[in-house]
Length: 472
Ligand code: SF4
Image 1 (spheres, rainbow, N blue to C red):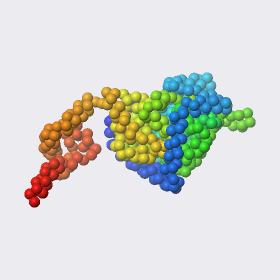
Image 2 (cartoon, protein in one colour; image 1 turned 120 degrees about the vertical axis):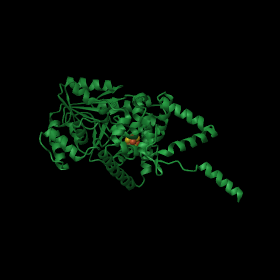
Image 3 (spheres, helix red, strand yellow; image 1 turned 135 degrees about the vertical axis):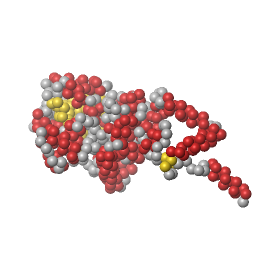
Image 4 (spheres, helix red, strand yellow; image 1 turned 180 degrees about the vertical axis):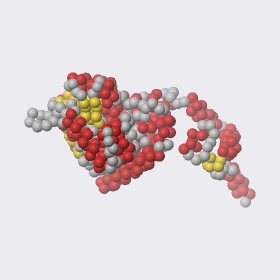
């Protein structure tokens, strides 16, 4: 999962100063949240569904080894090739080798977060193979040379004018910023690419162990074209995508679109079991399923195991006040929002991602909305502990908390410190508010107002009150 060149605070700062981005995020978040609320209320017993979803995910992850084995055996029985990739390099190596063997010139892709995680497009382009995103949002951000800023709405930060500008460059002429015209332009361009592609690549929302099938949910139909038109179909999936059987899938499929986009069900729900059979008229001649570990097995058996329950619905992003302000790119990782702040450091290590657990107000909205009950806010607190334990906290921060502990353990020094801070801060007040505090406090007042210290502290007020009562 690649980190963007600018540092975390720089990216956050850029996002906070991007008025368009902030408005787009608020609008999208509200729409998606409202949709989820309506759909979950319509079910009437949402909490029961949620509990059932959590039970299924817990049972599956606790028995992941046997379900993976069952899935692989059944998928192979149906004619698919299954490859377990320990690392992203192994996954990339398998796919690029296959593409070379097939003398592929282009790969058409439907949405796959795992392919983003392993940086597949760059690897294919490096060996001269064109990788084309066919999901409309992914196609837009590919043209903009960006990464997804939301798990399910990758181009959440782009408006129609920006999309028209990108499409006009492809067309070599001006394309109007009418959504209908833009969609039909993308359809026309992509239809040609589907027909020319040598390999179709998809992710897998779920993989059903009892039949060796993969299941895709989509709204655009591009997943069906990517997986049926080219002669070779490659699937990239995280090892935790498994569900035991179709009955379990039924529950999870009821939770996923409702939580993600506020839909009862997506326009297309596709199950694929093996490549084309003799009697089939259409379909790929070969199917390759790459099951990626890339750090996931290290999470098994730890206190963070339940993060593998995630069904990538994006609801935690849609309810997060931090994501609402900074958007996905500020996180710098493929997975953003609360799920990204937990998953990325667990997969990639805290050294490169130590800021992410702190990109959180600990309001708990993510855990409350998660359809499979992942305690995200609890994990974020634990990861903060791990940042300190692993020596990743800054020297200044460590000293600040040591001093804070010492001061609060000595009442007279504490009182002296409070009086000193009051006196030192008062000159910076404008009316009752300090808008620009000095030194490290300046970071706080950059984003928030600090109230001016009161003329009388609570302690003084309390003591005076006591004196008054004694005198009465
Ligand atoms: S952590 Fe929960 S809410 Fe967030 S994407 Fe995963 S399943 Fe959805």
